[in-house]
Length: 218
Image (cartoon, rainbow, N blue to C red):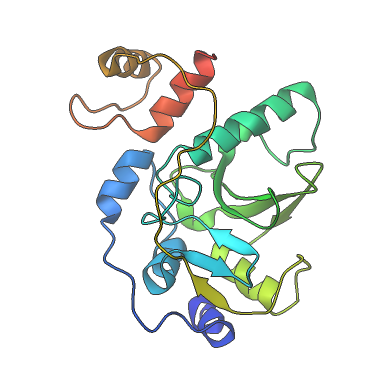
């Protein structure tokens, strides 16, 4: 039995399947490929929460906090980078290899360790606890992590086992500092100079935007 089937036994997915996902467009925006396991998970469950405690970001997330291609993953990485630079938290790897894709409690975060970047099906899971003061890692896929937690093999505080689909609501912007508008062509030129593969038209990949923002702090 694969992890998705095992998860479905623990937490039956919604009766109404979520809408189709354009994974090519999603991965273009992010500037990286995603694990096949995550794609199956997102296609079966859609946006929502497991055990009323574990939230997984989704390409169709209804808020900027839950949308996989929104600003939140980059903002979280910036906060982790600050902790890493100041030696305030035992981050398990360099923050450039962390991509925030969920939450496991009151402000606690769940990450992929995206190393190597071009082998997403080998990525491990990392999580911060106690608001970043403690970290854990899990050697497996996101679905395997969820099965392990919901079957009580891995200890993470949680509510009753189950899945609750997210409810659409008004888009709530992330409340963070903003920077003045920047010409995207300048970012493209900077990205190419740094060795990134940046298309000449369309959206600038998220990985390039995040790198530019780290190199040009507010």
